[in-house]
Image (tube, rainbow, N blue to C red; front, top):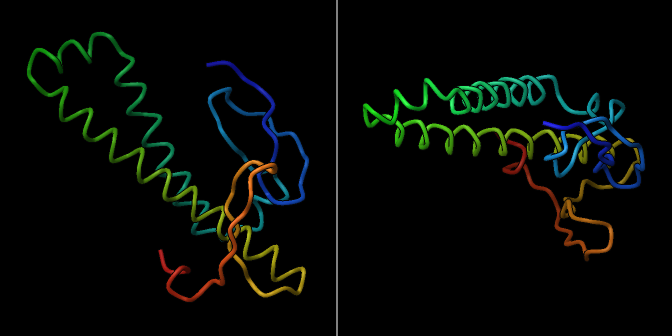
Length: 133
């Protein structure tokens, strides 16, 4: 795993963040602090679980033993689920950051598509149901 600079994905921020080369997006320290403690904790827990599973999959002896006992499909299914849960937790962190940025700017909360700056953004008002985990 190589390290690379990744730009902060918060709107209007151009801070470069040290991260893994396979990261598509990251948040700088200032913007991470805007997310709720619960969202950050949940992401940290779920991302850590995914990393542990990736380490297991990368262990040749463990994977060969799992393959020999037909547990490799279960390992793949668990990894898929862990990946989905980590992605959902990351989206919650980004949503919390976006909402806090809107509140601090005195604007009504609006959800923007988190895409590259050149892409068109879609905006829609945030309702309470989006705020539930």
